[in-house]
Amino acid sequence: MAVREARPLDTLEETVSVGLDRDGLLRLQRDLLLTRALEERGSTLFKQGRLPGSFYTGRGNEAASVGVASAMGPDDVAAPLHRNMGVHVARGAEPWRLLCQYMGRDGGATHGRDSNLRTQDLDLGLIAGVSHLPGILPTAMGVALAFRLRGEPRVAVGWFGDGSAARGDVHEVMNMAGVRGLPIVFVCDNNGFAYSTPTTLSYGARHLADRAEGYGFDGVVVDGTDVLAVYREARAAVEKARAGGGPTMLELVTLRMEGHAIHDDAAYVPPELLEEWRRRDPLARYDTWLRAHAGLTDAEDDALRAEVAAVVDDAVARAEASPWPDPATLLDGVYAPGR
Image (tube, rainbow, N blue to C red; front, top):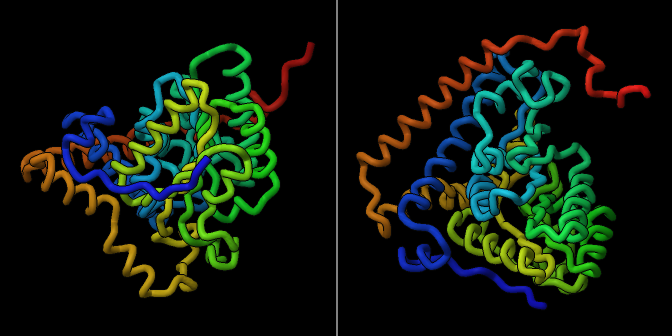
């Protein structure tokens, strides 16, 4: 077992060696752009009073979400959280249905019974997260245990944050997964703050991934703004788990570039820290890499951005056309049917 810090990919040949041809590289770009565009539009809709409740974004976290989800197999199962829009996008969730979920419309996965990214699509291998963030990890581990018992070559991926890493759920799940050698990958989105508590006040280890060795498996620290490094390490961890090699913990280091939710101005984040991470914006960083190493042209980039803008416009229109849920169906699916 070892903790290591992942290095970046420097050439097109390296990306091909991990399964990403040029079309695959452009798919990553499209998913990154769509993830941010959906969240930016969601913020606007909220401010216009067209999106109820609250709104959470993963700005700065797009590469971490898209990179991991893109590395998973079609039959694998993901249990992402409320900042992992990119996981849903990369797994093929329909954008208009995601917006329906935020808007409380009938076209959302919960048909208006919940909001935000507490949405799932089992056909796409997506299990909804919960508010008590590491509370989804026992579910992810149960999925991995089911794969083991059935002899299925499938992998579960469970997400948690740096703040929730302090909870007992995380320790208990990782311990059992390590003991049983389960086919699961743990993804820690370490985005600098647990609400307003900085990581310096949350744990004393150098890296959260340092804990993995104590559970009997590998930990890897990855720059979460580097979508290619995230993809490579996630792919290696998923395939290792699929082959019977047990769990891996990926610590994806980013910064939450906006507040905990739309009501929060994040005044507790030092301005110089925000500026440092703005210079490492994952979308700008990947665009620069594509132009330098994969020959991305202005025409290709313009076409991708136009496609994304059209998808978002269509998603908003379809979501707002979706009906509100019928109050008469309030209890449908809440209780098991009587015998």
